[in-house]
Image (cartoon, rainbow over all chains, first blue to last red; front, side):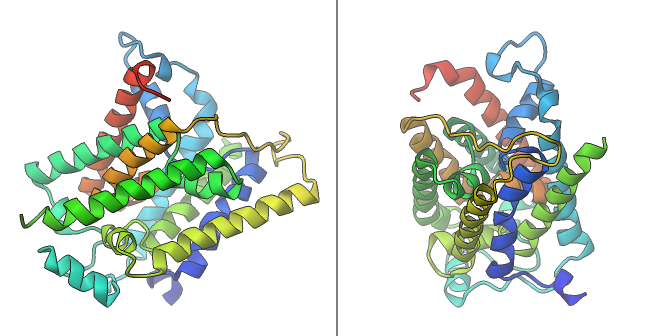
Length: 185
Length: 139
């Protein structure tokens, strides 16, 4: 049962994630992608008095997709709680030193740093604002890492390459110029 | 309801992999953007390679129907450049800051992380904002 507890190497995880593409086609002719669910959730919750056309469609046709992300949450629960890895995340030495130089403590057991994720008004304001960027950007780009980087590139689509270049560019800017100064000026 | 079971199972596998591979980790994302480990690149490249190969296999085998009888089709993404690049930049910028893209958001929310749920709430508002502003944006 050790393999359920320990982290998985890239050569196990990557192919499993890649298999999502043919699996979803095989199960029901679906394109693998996560961020559409954010749209469906907006469509479900949009009050009838608010009339944004982008969210006026029959979301029930996308129930399969919502079921998939409920599964994703359950999978996260199984992997992160039931079969939790007790060891701290083993970063490469260079990354370990880097996050310390940014003022973060070494990884202690969570996948995300307490410095940014523990409950405080400051943290939650920041997390919410970044969530807005992610939600806005993915919908503007028509997909996220799964829909563009995995499904789009797997099916050799040029627009997905543009999106992936944009995504990586945005990530580089944030990670090189802002994250190092988030905790210490 | 039974027809949704495969989606639930595959979704569970996906969430499990995201957490076990630590792709849902802020630390791993920073490590990736600073090119300090092959781990995340290995995940992405091998996932894409698996996708490319399996799509070719599906095409060659000539399997035309999914389990539920529909014919298998791979829709093309709408043509364009601006929306993909600019949207990607905005999304990537947020991803670089908090280290969570939509898949890992759901997976981490499932572990009970309040912070991840706040990110998810933000992402829903961002999605809604896009829907409201869609007509005024270049695509």
